[in-house]
Structures are given as structure tokens and as C-alpha cells.
Image 1 (spheres, rainbow, N blue to C red):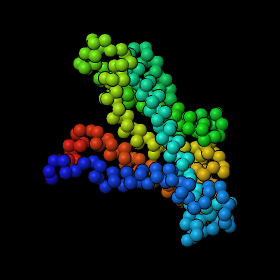
Image 2: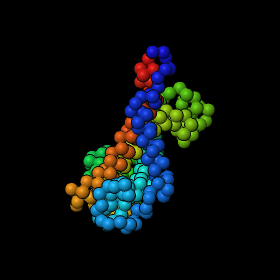
Image 3: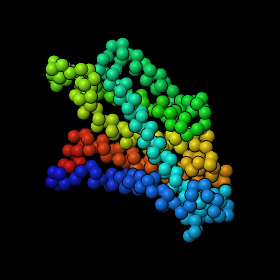
Image 4: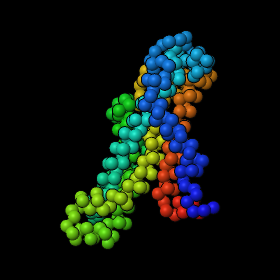
Length: 278
């Protein structure tokens, strides 16, 4: 095989993941166009099986399940992107400051991160969401609370390994401030791994938000959100279409972003990229 004939993005799982990511983003953007009905419209008899008129059937209130799944993408995906962005920014800033200054600053910030790591993520998220109140906005804040330490750990390690490099020392000798050094000199070494972790975390964020909604701590009825749709369908377990389609939506989003994250990691790792091309 000749060099350069293959790239990580041409791997089958990468193509599948990218296709599903693009599909779900388009569904979220075009939900009012794609959905045949509104998410709250009671337009038919209750609990109709999937048919040509209602492809995913109807729920216990006569609402079109397909429409609610489509509108659910408008809820889950933007919130997942938002909380991942918040977690990445907060964790990266904390990790960069801790790794660059070291000493008591590093010790204080990392002990705070260790405090969050001491609890299982879903348990801590449940506790925070319950304390703030059962609301989707509070569920987002709860997931941010449990997610930022991972970024802080990653960025801290990267900054500590690069802060004594010659180019950083040269910049400091030329009068660069600490903030400029972190933003201009160290940021390029941090951006790639953080991007990979963020791509992987989008799927986890969707899963956590859906899990909190499933437990009654996130989205509340009648909002069209995948986790709350699954739990409402559990009361009618034999009516499989009520929980299967929102469950498959969660599954495909999580797998898609995991595939994309793995591909980004391979593409940004020179050793892996050479192995794939070779």
C-alpha cells in the first residue's frame, strides 16, 4: 500500500460515525421542516402502532412519536454541545493555570478536581440536579460540574510537559506574560487532545442528560426529550415503539460521536496516522 493512500477518515467506522453526526445535526437544524407534526400536537388516537400515516406510531396522548423524536434532537444535541463547551473551557483554564504555575496553585486546584473525582459521575450529577431542582437547565449544570475535572487533568499534564520547552523559555525572555505564553505558546499543544476529548464527551453528555431525564431530574413533561420519552414508554413496555425509537436515537448519537472522537485521536496522533497509512 502506498503512503498516503489511506487516512483515518476513510475507515468504515469513521465514515459511519461522521454520517450519523451530520444526519443528526441536520435533523436538529431542520426539525420544524422534517417533523410532520408539532411535538405537543395531539393529532390521532392514542397508542397507535407504527403505520404509513404515523411511521413511529403515537404515544399515550395521541402525539406523533416520530415528530417528538425529531424535535428531541433540537433539545439533546444543542445542550450536549453547550455543556461540553463549558466543561472544556472551565477545565482547560483550570488545568492550564495549575500546570503552568505549579506549587500551591496546582495543589489547590487539583485537590478540587480530586474532590469531584471522588464520587461516581452519575451519582454526583444526580445529587447536584436534585439539589438545584428537577429541570433541564439544572441537569446541564450538574453534568458540567462532573465533567470539567477530566479536562483539567488532561490540560495540566500537557502544560507541565511543555512549560519548560525552549520555545516557551524564549518567549518569556522576550517579555511574554504568563497569559500570553499560555494562549500563544502552549495552546497549540493542548488544542488537539482537548478536541478529541470533547468529541468523545458529546455522546457521553447526551447519555448523561438522557439518564437524568429518565430519573426525573432533567427534562419534564411534556417536553420532547429522548430520556423522558424512554421513561414515559416504560409504563407501556409491551408497546415497544414508545421507548425503542428514542432509545435508538440516544444509541446512534453516542456511537457516532465515539467513532468520530476515535478517528480524531487517530488523525492527530502521528504514530497512529503513520500506522494507518503504512
